[in-house]
Structure formats: C-alpha cells, structure tokens
Amino acid sequence: MSGLFEQLQQKAKQNPRKKALIKPTKAFFTNKYHYESIDFEELVRRCLCFENGLRKLSIERGTRTLVFVKPGMELAPLTFALFKIGAVPVFIDPGMGKKNLLDCIKKAKPEAMVAEPILAVIQKIYPESFKTVKQKIYTQGSWFFYPKYTLRGFLNTEAESLSTSTKESTSSPAQDELAALLFTSGGTGRPKGVCYTHKIFETQTKMLQEMFKLGSEDVDCPGFPLFSLFTLSMGATNAIPDLDATKPAQCKAERLIQNITDQKATFVAGSPAIWERVADECIRQEKKLPSVKSVVMFGAPVSLDLHRKFREILPNGTTYTPYGATEALPVALTSGKAILDGPDQKMKNGHGTYLGKPVPGVEIKIIKITDQIEEQIKELPIHTLGEIIVKGDCVTRFYDGMPEQTQLAKILTTEGFWHRMGDIGHLDENGELWFCGRKSHRVQTATQTLFSIPCESIFNQHPEIKRTALIGPLTNQRDKSAAGLVIETINQKNLTTKEKQKIIDELKELGSKHHKTKEIQAFYFCKAFPVDVRHNIKIDRNLLTSWANNAQLQQ
Image (cartoon, rainbow, N blue to C red):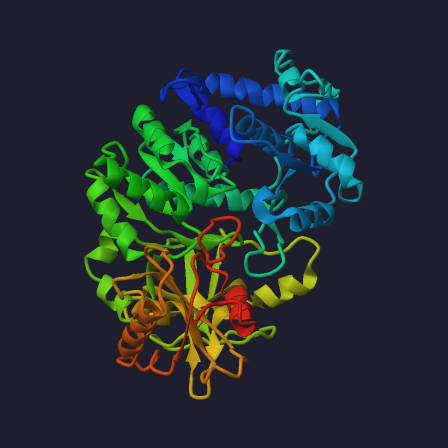
C-alpha cells in the first residue's frame, strides 16, 4: 500500500491540470455563484509548501496537531501535508458543545494547533485545555489579528528542497503508525478519541473506491468534509459545497442543489439530515439531479420515504446507506434500489433496518447482549437478535488514553480482535445484516426486551406520524407500562386533546397487531425531537425518557 499523499501525488502526475478543489462564493445581490478552483498540480504544491512551513516549526513525525480549519482551499492540502510528515492531525467536531469540545482538546494533548483565527480567542478564555500547545498556526490574519505564522504565509514561498538532514527523516510513516485522532460525537456517551493508523486510511480508500466505483472522472460534493480526502486521493474533483457541515439539519438546500448542478457532481455524501432537505426542495422545485450517480447517507437510519423521494430525483443514480461507525467504517452496504425492491415490507413490519451484506474484507458476527466486558465470542444463530461485532483491516484497535473503554469495546481472540458496535441486529439466511437499534436504547419490560427500530417502524406507518421514539424505563406512577412511545407529527402543529387521543387510539390499534409493540400503552407528544450534534438526526431517546419521567412531555 502507498500513503494517501503518495496516491494524491501519483494522480497529480497523471492529470496535473485537472481541477482538484472548487470553492463556491455566492454573489451578494444575486443567487449566482463564482467558483474558485485549483488543479492537482497546485494542490500538491500547496501540500509541499505547508509541509515545509510546518517542519520549520518542528512539527514532525508523531506531533499531535489540533486541526480546526473550515472546508476550503486549506483543509485538504494541510491534512495531506500532516500525513506526509507523519504528524498526527486531531479532528474534533466543533458542534459537540463547548464542554465536550474543551474536554476533548485537553484529553488529546496536542503539541501544535492549526486553526481559524477564532481559536485564538477561545484559547485565551480557556487556556487550561490548550496548555500542551507549543506551536500555533492560523489560516490567515486580519486587520486586527496578526499571528506570527499563517498557512497563507507558507504559500508565499515556493516548495523548496528539503535539507539533507531533513531528508533522512522523511521516510513514509509505517502502516501501523498513528495517523490521526478522530473524536466520536458523544451522542451516545462521552466523546472518545479513535486511533486511526495509516493502514486503516489506505484500506478505507480502497474499499470506498470499489464500493462506489469511484475514479478520476468523478466530481465529489461532500457534505462531510473529511470524506473528500478519500476521493481526492482517487483523483476525483472535490467541489466544496456552500454548507456548514457542523449543522447539517440547517443547510440551505437550494444552495446545495445549485452547487451540485453547477459542478455536475456525480457523488454526494453526508448526514441524512442534509439529504432530507435536498429531496424536499427538489420535489418543491420539480428538479432532478441527472449528474448524480450516488447519494451516500450515513450516521443514522434512513427512512423508506427518503429512498422513495430520491428514486424520482435521480434518473441516473440511486441512494446508498453504508453502515459503520467512527471506530469501524465501512462495515456493510446496501442501496435504496435494493431496499425498495424487496426488504422494505419487512422493515415496515418490524424486522429492523436492512443494511445489506458485509463489504469485502469485513467479517460480522452476532453475540449475546451484555453491557459487561467480553473475553470470548459465542456466535448466535441466524435471525437471533444480539450485539453486532465486526473484524477487518478498516477496524480501529484503540481509544486514545481510555484503556477501560477500549477493553469494553474490543474482544481479543487468537484470530485477531473484534469491535463491538454497540448496536443490536441479526443476520439472515443470506448473510445479510439487519439493524434493530442501539444497545443502550433497549427497554426491558416484564415480559420481553423491546428494541427501538422494530417497534418504531410499526408505529411510523401511521399517516400523521413523522417519526416516533421508543423510551423507557418509565418510572412515572401514572404510566402502566415500562415502555412508552414519543410521537413527532408530520406538521408539528399544536393538537387538541381530542386530536391527540384519536392518534393515540389508532396507534394502540396498530401496535396491538404485533407481539413486540402490543404492551406499549404510554404515549407522549413532542414537537421536535432532541437529536445528536454531528448528524442532527439521531434521536436522543435517553433524554426523551428523562423528560417523560419528569412530566416534561405532553400525553
């Protein structure tokens, strides 16, 4: 295998004048965009300029470097430069909230920082989290802020030859060396630093290229910025969208549609929250996206309705829903076309969410459900619900500085190690995976264990329901069952007591037809569900349970 920078460099040699990065700027008085671009030759030059600038500041192999740079013309060349040096970029989602963000920075112990100027202010206010940072580089200065070192300043000098002494230490990092720290969002617990090696990144690139048949003829419009590192190393053009990736549910769909149309994007990826808005806007405008071959949605279950919408919007493509996590990606893959041609009926009837077959190079097993440390693998039979575990070269081995969490999440065997996904599911007779919810969201009643996805999919068939959330255990004495259901209606309007009761009666009738839902008798209404910070679509069922138990939800 070769490193991601080496792959990028090879593509630049093959096609130096091909556009690599395209950045949109919206005209102030019109809806038109001006697009700035650089080619692959210039992208590699910038990587080398950044590398030289960073090395002069003693950022070297193993240097943990906090990266807070917006998607644009700097993020990709900076990251590739850090990979080439063998430094360790630290990526933390700024949308996870101030407390978690500062805690993650402190845990990561970065020795250097490359950031937008706003980080200078944050560092002054919260110095404790940045106390290990010895070197600071900012993207640029301004009329009131004059940093000593900037990325733009690095670009003012040509990529000079390295000195002989430096050359001796610039061999490519080893496959098993730490390449980056990527923090989980903390949506289902404390954020954790996931340790990525160079081998994992290179394996993922190869897998994704084969999964989506990506190549240099493609144009990627990424809703998740780090995904573009993979497609750039494949030689694809990266058309940066006019999008705040930290707030996917608030994206301006019409802008994204314009970017996709203007650049004839063939591949788009990101949170389902983004593509829900895009689909609705396309339908409203009666627009199609003929250039798009693949709409890739990840981070949360995707509704059947969203797949159906895109079936009409994509005359030359389809949707894809890769399954995985920060610790293991990709694990399994299916498409909207495959789902709507068969498994959709099983999904409606509480079978779970269909995820497809494991991707080549990944092994999946189902084991018994437990919250304790596992030291042995006892595989369950097909169609038996249990915890999903995975093994493969794309699976990370450690959490940074968290040995207890590593021990809980990993199972070491003589054949290698397995990662516990923290998800419940089952394998069918065809070896295909079905997802039934997070392990932490299961609810134990007097007679059975209920799982979120199978129960919710049954109730979601009601015509006035946008989505539902299984909650529990309920401790409120007014409730007669341990499990309850929170309802978000399509129109999110204020319902009268009579209208609410009508919906509840109809949901009880719907639930009575299935063993897994018939004992759910407590129903609550919520105008808008609390969701995770990264994808803006994962429902926080634990918070809803707390609200219900404290009478903060309407019955």
